[in-house]
Image (cartoon, rainbow, N blue to C red; front, side, top):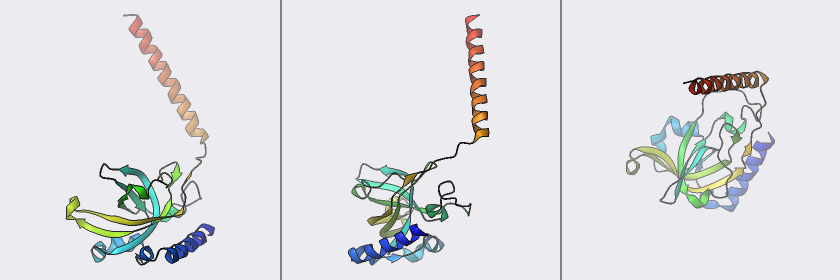
Amino acid sequence: MMRRLLAAITLVLIAVAQPAAAAADDIDLADLLADPAAYADAQVALVGELIGDYGFRPDGTVWTQLNDDPYATAPLHAAGGTPSGGNVGVGIVGDRSMFHELDPPGRFDRVGPVVRAVGVWRYHDDARGGESYLELTDLEPIWPGYPIQQPLSRPVLIVAIGLAAIAVLLLAGAVRKQRHR
């Protein structure tokens, strides 16, 4: 609840401080994906978590994934979130300078930064082989990413130790067999 309030306050401040970026229509990713052609070449703003990897390209751009699903605000392990469907995201691309100050993107052991991505929705862009993506004009951090502390599972640890012991025994047997040849 506190994070949502902080995000709302941040969005209001951004809207006041940056009128051009604020002029974009804030939409939910689900609405965009329900009718992507309706937003073709329109300036939109999406709020979500950056996940996966930052793909720094030789042309000075960075590609990554922006997810707008329940896991962006309530990760399963970090915030006690509950499974509620699959991940929902789109590709975004922008100038590399937009990404240098951001925390690493989210993955299994960390929550990525939550951002407001403003840009032009490119639907089936012929210049990119029919790819659909958000071409960024602005990328505004809302809150930083952070590592997730995974709880240690005793049964998993026991199985891992057992498998490691079996591997050592098999390797020792193979070495012994090789020496006796």
